[in-house]
Amino acid sequence: MTAFKREARRRQATWRAAKRYAYGEHPKGQPNGSMLADEAGLAYKNFLSDKIESAVRHREQHPQKHQTFHGPRLRNNLLSSMPMCFNLFGELHQYTTRLSRTGSALWGVERAGVGIVFEWSPGRLDPSYTGDRTAFDVALFFGDRDLPQTVIGIETKYHEHATTEAPPRPHRMERYREITERAIGEYKVFKSDWEARIVGKPLQQIWRDHLLLLSMLQHDSGRWADGKYVLVYPRGNTAYAKLALDYADALDDPTTFTHATVEDLLDAHVLHEPNTEAEFRERGSAARTGDSWG
Image 1 (cartoon, rainbow, N blue to C red):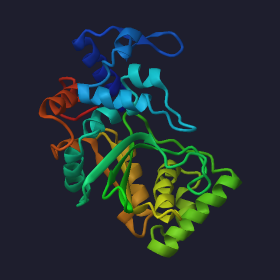
Image 2: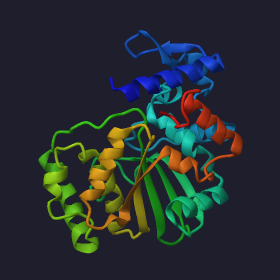
Image 3: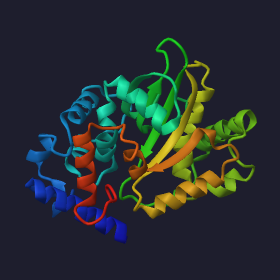
């Protein structure tokens, strides 16, 4: 339990109490102030506007093959990064003008926004991609529906801290290495010592998400012209800030990777209606600091 995690729990519990939403329970049954009771969760009180709620409902109504998408955790858990992701990007859903402004302001994409999908992969367990269950928390698409598009694949973190993963199993590693080496040959993405820096280290999770983006750019379908993988975390989550810098240092060409704090994205004032942005900041700051969501 880091100081950041404790502060995140306090902020979300304070926000819940200020809204007078009943607290819920930890999965093991203990009362938990950073969980919503089922009544509030089922009423979508974890989400900050009607437009965001609409985005959540739309995703729930459109399941994807082999998805990992847990409805109660999404609706009830105030600390989960997935509700934060919906609250951060949900007002782009079905609002292509706002999506276009967001692509231009945040990532320099000068193409029209065409769509946004949460908890999305082009093909979970599909060997023509990464062959595993890796998915973006949200993917934004730009361009022409009938031509190769630009994709921004985003991973959001809130109170999580970086952990060390076991090296991938050999059959997974074979595909991961293939994507990586092709990215080096075609785009010079990674430095020559990438394996020593990444595999079996805390950087491995970021790498696997990045490989999903790279596998799309390499795909025989030609559906994607270009794209970027973006890691997003609150300013207070210094563990992920360090991890992002370490990962960037493992790259020779950073064109397909970037990272940003939640506060950086909010400060562009393109993601939300003004009232929703204010509510987002209030929920994160919980009357103690200006940082959002931790």
